[in-house]
Structure formats: structure tokens, C-alpha cells
Image 1: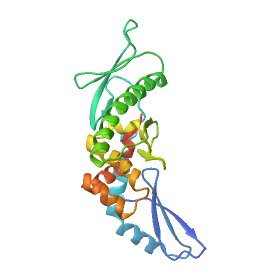
Image 2 (image 1 turned 180 degrees about the vertical axis):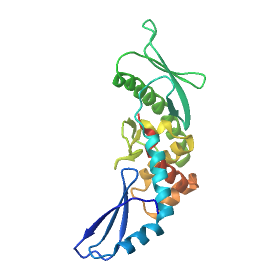
Image 3 (image 1 turned 60 degrees about the horizontal axis):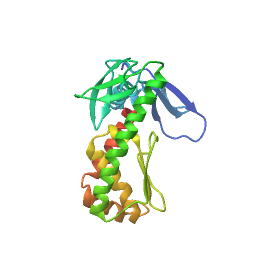
Image 4 (image 1 turned 60 degrees about the vertical axis):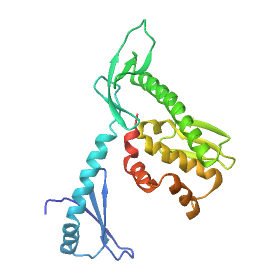
Length: 228
């Protein structure tokens, strides 16, 4: 067996062996204090295929969440597609981000934070335009109209509906495929009528977005790609 692991032995009432993978590939085994080494080794061998799969996925996820440098050649997401970036500085042209011919162009100088500011501003504007149109479309379909719509900078909460029917959506949603955005919008619009996640709520969502479970899973599995 070619797997290296650390064992934490407990004198407490632990009765079973458990396994945890930390920091991409660090394997930690928790076991009752007097568990024989052979038994622990056998436990790890039985889990070897699963361990390899998890470590590989962690490595792939680590690549996805690499911090952006805002340099020419990097790729940025827009409506589910990845597009290359070209960075330049032309002082007599308007500073900021332009999306043209399937490519991002960033006219900016200065540090990474200022370049990120231009991207966030561009994403917020696009998210506001796109999401408002889709809220209007589904709102008319469902006969549910929000009191207001707000675009936020939330990193993991894609949308919300307040008790008095004010909707909020993260600008990062504009990076997702359109069908994912539609699911989040329908989800929050439905909360205007159904304030919890009881079966009736999901039934209403499914009437408009039959594949909502797949979309929920996609968001859970891909949340790390929305980094900036």
C-alpha cells in the first residue's frame, strides 16, 4: 500500500475507526487507543480507491480556486463559458473591462486590487441587467413580484428572499450557466409564496425547473470556480 497517513489514538469512548482527508492530501486516521496497527492498515487499504478519488478531486478543486492575477492569458467566466483576458494600458481610452468577440479586454494600470475592482464592477452591471430580465420573465409566469431586487457581493449565498419579499442575488451568479441562474431566480421567487423548504415549496420549483436537483448539485460541486 502506497498511502501515508497519520493516526490519532483516543483513550475516550471511541469505538470505531474513522478517516479524514485534510489540506488536499493529508490523511488522518482516528481510532480507539488499543486498535492494532494491522487493523488500521487494513481499514485504509479497504478505503484506498475512495481516498485516491477524493485526493484527485481535491487537486482539481485547488486548481480551480487559484487566485486571479488579472494577467493576459487568464480565463474568466461569463454565463457558464470561459473566456481569455487581454490586459493593456491606454491612458487616452476609458479604463475598465470590455467583453468583445469572445474575449475580455482590461484597460488598467496599477495593482491587482484596482484591476479586480474593474472586473467586479463589470460583473455587477451584467448581473443586474440579466437577473432583472429573468426575474421579470419568471415573475410574470408565476404571478409573483418581488418588492425589490438587489445585487450583492456574497461569495456563497447565491440568492435570498426576505420576509417582506425583497430579493437579493450575488453578482457571481453571472458566471454560471443560464439554466443555473434561472434555477436560483425561481427558487427565490417561490419563497415569496412559500417561506420555507417544505415539500410544497420544492413541488412549486419543480413545476418550472424540473431539473432543479441537478442544478442544486452543480452549485454545490462548483462553488469554488466563482473566485475573483
